[in-house]
Length: 114
DNA sequence: CTTCTGACGAAAT
DNA sequence: CATTTCGCCAGAA
Image (cartoon, rainbow, N blue to C red; front, side, top):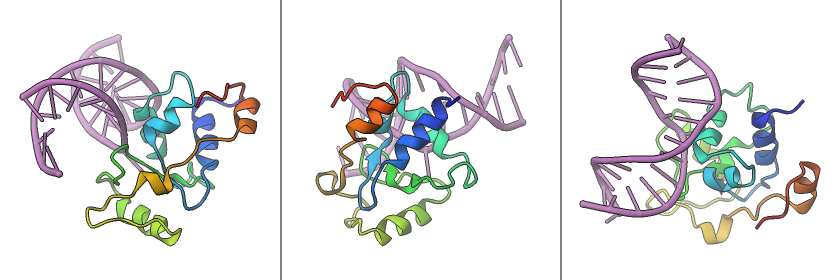
């Protein structure tokens, strides 16, 4: 049976290349989950994150906060076409993830909130 | 069980 | 814009 963590990872898996989401945004799609929990889950390890585009999840400020692997994360994003301005920030207007499709929400019993 | 530590975020300063 | 403060909460020690 899928626990909360699996749902989060599955949700992150829905983020298409070339798009990014912030922790709070992802958390808001799963009742009871807070931004911090999402971050903590993604800090697990490559083993846990197998097949999960963890690099497409950044903080609400549109930047990659200092953490081990931040450099690699930025590299992966740029490889997908994400552009960082001189302040190491991305433009939400251009890359903001629209959220999971209604299909995904239905599969998990959630209502298309946004 | 208690304590500590954050891949967060919003508001205040 | 940079820092600080506070709320929140899952794991590790």
